[in-house]
Image (cartoon, rainbow, N blue to C red; front, top):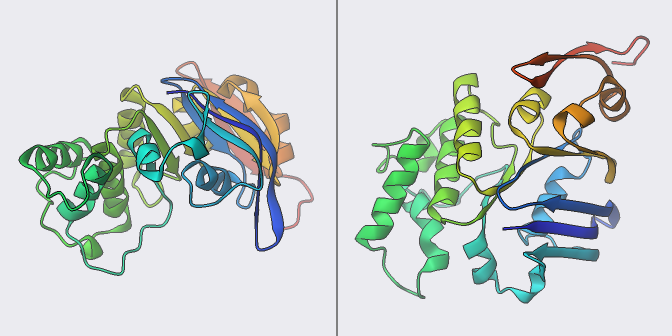
Length: 257
């Protein structure tokens, strides 16, 4: 599935956050959004998964405006792993993952044996097999993140939106999650803090700064010392590992803490 934004603008609290962003994620492409806190990465994703209405521009799915789809239809096409996952009720792990089946069910339809098998397979894929009856509230931050990815996988969509998907994860699970997502062959757009993960797994990067596009291209094109200095205000040395950029940081001389 091809995903695009055209001159996308968005505001919150009376302040414009996105200032006309053009983005394209081609079918099967892993696209990374990079930039410091407050640059607009999460806001851009929220416009795509419809928790924030853009103030201008458009979001297109396979060339069709997003607003032409019902919420149910867009949920059949786009799975989401958001950054914050708090629930007022104490669901079990299985109950949460089965929520991913809702877009494919009729109103008030009960979960079927096939739905439960899809949920179990999704949990196994993220290393959470056997945890179905655990309370979500008792899980660690990293375990919760993996459960939310399993819920998105249970939706069986052609596109995944990930907002800091490796947040709270140990290095082992950071790498396994990125390997898993990349191996799915889906269209993926992920907001990432770790530039080395972005370099290792993304096909294309969009760098945001203050709600504007600071650069786009392959990781090799984007992750240069010049752009890293411009966007993150740190000095960096960019080397290579396994044919991909590898970044080392150091504070800018004379920079304020």
